[in-house]
Image (cartoon, rainbow, N blue to C red; front, side, top):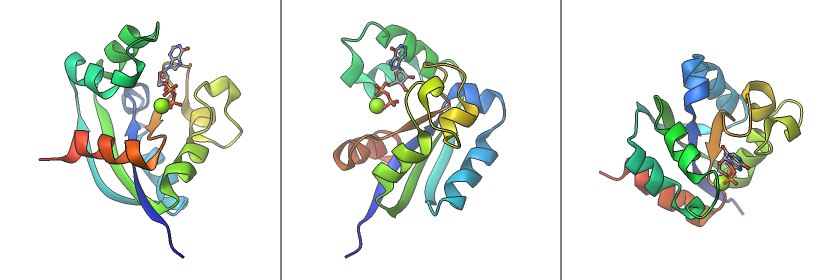
Length: 136
Ligand code: IDP
Ligand code: MG
């Protein structure tokens, strides 16, 4: 039985700043993801706060929101079988130092905050996050 899913991916400011968006998009395509929609945007701090609301109690919340709104990002809807989990596996661990060889965060991440990529962590959150950026 097929299990085609969509997930939300963000190429974060550190990677866009280093002009890695085409290289990272190619990584997704090589790994059988279809990029259904994509756009380059620069969000406000308020939008970042809304997007990362689940983390509002965390000590790093303010820095995280400042960071995500610090420069342009590329937001994408990715589609494939098991897209949510496959994207998490392709990204690797949150901390690039712990991310396995060959994962995006291992290859491109600079630090736990500048870790180059975001990916939804569940099908339910993927729907919410896709709506957040692509509902018009
Ligand atoms: P994830 O991006 O792998 O899903 P989350 O725990 O959802 O990781 O955290 C969201 C983002 O917050 C991470 O991608 C990372 O940039 C940042 N972050 C997570 N933990 C820390 C921390 O301990 N210090 C600073 N930033 C953090
Ligand atoms: Mg997360």
